[in-house]
Amino acid sequence: MSDSDAMCSAWRKPPSRYLEERPPRFRLPERPRSLYLTMRDGCRLAADIYLPLGETPVGGFPTILILTPYYRRFALREGASPTTDPSPNAGKYRDFFVPRGYALVVVDVRGTGASFGTRDSFRSPVEREDYREIADWIVAQPWSKGIIGSTGISYLGAAACFLASTGHKAVKAIAPLFAVWNTYADHLYPGGVLLNNLARTYDELMIGLDHDRRDILARQPYFSNPDFAGPQPVDEDVDGSLCRAAVREHLANFHMPDFISEFQFADSRLPYDEAFGAFSFSPYHYAESIDPDVAIYSISGWMDGAGFSNGSIARYLSLPNKKQHLLLGPWDHGARTNVSPWRKSVQPEFNVLAEVLRFFDHYLMGLDTGLQHESPIHYFCLHEEQWREATSWPPIEDSKIFYLSASGALSAAIGSPGEDIYRVDFTVGTGSLTRHERLSAIDTSEYYTDWQGRDERMLSYTSPPLEEKVEIAGHPVVDLWLKSSERDAVLHIYLSEVEADGTVRYVTEGVLRALHRKEAEPQRFQKWTWPFRDFSRANAEPLTPGEPARMRFALLPTAWVFQRGSRIRMSIAGADCDHYVQLPHGRPPVLGIQRGGRMASALTLPWRQGGIQSKTRGKP
Image 1 (spheres, rainbow, N blue to C red):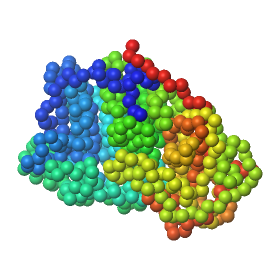
Image 2: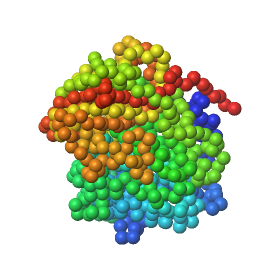
Image 3: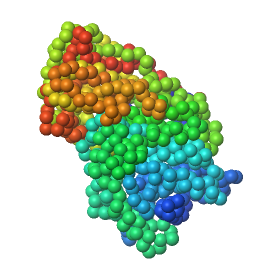
Image 4: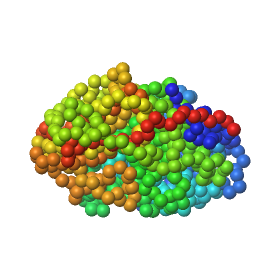
C-alpha cells in the first residue's frame, strides 16, 4: 500500500492536488549569487542567494532561509558530470520554492562550509545571534518583500526554530521538518540513556565536512559523490584562498563525543561556562521569544529516530501560537523511506514539500490555499494504511489497560501478586534495521524485517487474541514496579503485534533509566501529554537494591491498527547493545518485575475499538 494523500478523506484538498494547481511560474538562475555576510564580531558567513527569474512582484519576493552545517554548495572537480547537483542538501528547496516565486537564501552556519569561525556547540547561542543578523540583511535587500520563512530537515529544522526565537519581526512562518524540541531528550539521551554510536558517527561526518576531509566523505552515503571537491568558495574568493582559511579555522570546532559527555544530566553546565547548559542547544529553551503570531508546521515520522516525533508533538503542544499544524507520517528521519511493512514502494509517495509549499503560500504569500479549512493535525495509521485528521493531540482519548499477569499474560484484570525475575543480558540488541540507523547517516531502507524471534531473550507478556481490530494513536504508557539487584538499571520496552499466523511485527518502543524515574510537572514550554520528567541531577535517585520502585513512562508515539485475531505483546529488556550505552557499567542487574495486587504493573494503550470506517474523498 501507499502513503499517497490522493483520494482519502483526511484533507479537503490533498497536498498533491494543491501542487497540481500551483505550477512553477519563474525560472531558476543558472547559478546563485554568493557572498560573505559579516557578523557583529567580524566573522564572515558564506551565503548563496537564488532569485526567481521573471517579472518581480510589486514589493519583492518573500524569502525562504535555509541555515545548514552540511554545505550550502559543493565545489565540483574538473570534469564533473553535468548532472551532478552541487547542492545535495539545499537543492530540493531551491528547485521547489524558487520557481514558485520565493527567494532562497542558503547560509553555511558559523564554523562550517566556506564560512569562517568555529563551532562551540551543536547549535549555540552564538549561532542563534547570527540568525538575527542574517534576517536583518535579507530584509534590507531591494528584492526582499521583508517577509521570511525557514524550513529544513533535522539540524536545519531546529535552526528554523532558533531563527524564530530571535523574535525578528520579518519571520512569519517556519516549518521544522524531522527536528527536535529538546535536544537532550529527543535526540542524544532518550530516556536519560546516551545513544552509544550517534555522537561518534556525527563527529566523523562533521570532520569530513568541516575539515574538508574528502577521504572521510567518500565513506558517507549522502556525500560520497566523487565529483564533490570541498565547500564552494563565494564569488569574490576567486582563488579559493578565503575558503581554505575558513576551513583552517574549523579545525578548532568542538567534537561531539567529548562535548556531549559534559551533559550527563539535562541541567548539567559546562564547567568553564556556568551559563551554558544542555538547554543552550535546545529550541524549547528560547520558546518564550517566539512571536505568538508566527505560523509553525511541525512534521515528523513514526520511525524518526529515538524521539524526534516527540519533539514535533511537544512543540505543537507547548507553544501558544494559534497558527500551528502537525503532520506525522509512515517515515524515517527525513522521509527518505516509507517504513510501513505493507508499503507499495520504499520511496514515499506523499510529497512533504508540497504541504510545506501550501503552508508558506498561505502565511507568507497570502494566497487562498484552503489551509484554514483543514484540520490542524494529520497522521498516518499503519496496518490500516490510511491518513487520519484530528483537531487535538492525542487523537484518541479513550484508553485500555492491560495488566501484567502470571505465565506471561497481558490481562484485562489485576491478578494475584507475583514477581517475574529477569536477568539482564547486556548482549541483547535490536540489530541494524531499526529507527536509529538513519540518524547515524546509514542509508537504510528496511525496518525491523528481522524482528521475528528477537523477543525470545526478553521478558514478554502477551494478550489473548483480539475479537475485533483496534486502533491505537498516541503514546502507549507503561507503569512498572520493579526490584533491582543494582542501584541503577535501564528498561527497554517493546510493543509488538503477534499476528494470527505467528508473525511478530515491531510497533514501537520506549526506554528509561531508573535513575530518572521521578516524574515532574511539565515545564512551561515542554507540555507533554505523556509522563514528564526533567532528567535533572536534582531529581535523579539511585535505586535501593531489593526495594520496589515505580517506573511510569511513555513509549514513542505511533498510530497502528492491530488486526482481529492478533495479540498484543509487551517485551522487557535491560539493554540494547546496538544503540544504547550499557548501564550500570559492567553490572548486569537482576530485575524483579512486580505484578498484581498493590504493585500491578500495567500497559495503557490509546484505544479505539474497531478503528475508523475507511472513506475516500474525490475531487469536488
